[in-house]
Length: 262
Image (cartoon, rainbow, N blue to C red; front, side, top):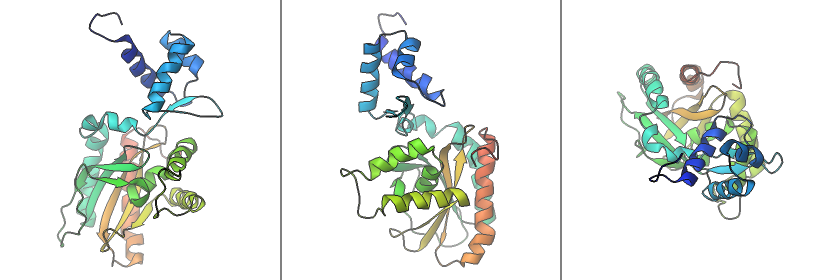
């Protein structure tokens, strides 16, 4: 790119992000330098900057760079109008009509938060107290959508986020032990849904299912919010199958092949 009004360094940074986003395995420093047609030193300065900004993570064993979930914040304004939202919306409306409960769509925007990007809150009964709206953020570990996304990330990305959550700088009293969290995430992945019994909103229960991309990685989560006093057998028979089915339909529309990492 040769133009007096452009910055080549910025162009290379975006190109590096594009290259890594297109790769399932990630890129080494040497591979990036070759693709960007720059020196090892130049590639190192670029990747160090992107890591400092938390857009890149380097696997200590394979020495390969991968994107971090923070990349979602970069396109949040677009995400609100994105393919995920457009594809999910008719399915969300149908689920809302069938169950007569609130339906939410959320994505992870950092190692510690999810954000709601769509919400259908039409119900015939009294609205539940949640104070949630499109744009609301919640801690990833205290949210059904956050936990379902975590459970369906790659092992490397999941470990990175858990290491951050359990670092001395960030650890919260409400976090269970790291081993217990991993057990919970394995069980969530096995079941195909997560359950969150909120302390913040004591009258509700939330269930979430993953939305997977063509690589079988969670890119979003869909949840339903219901009164806590509903019988568990009723929830298991009526709510959970419809929720999981809706998540699979949205995933399929995004290019995910059923049976692949699901």
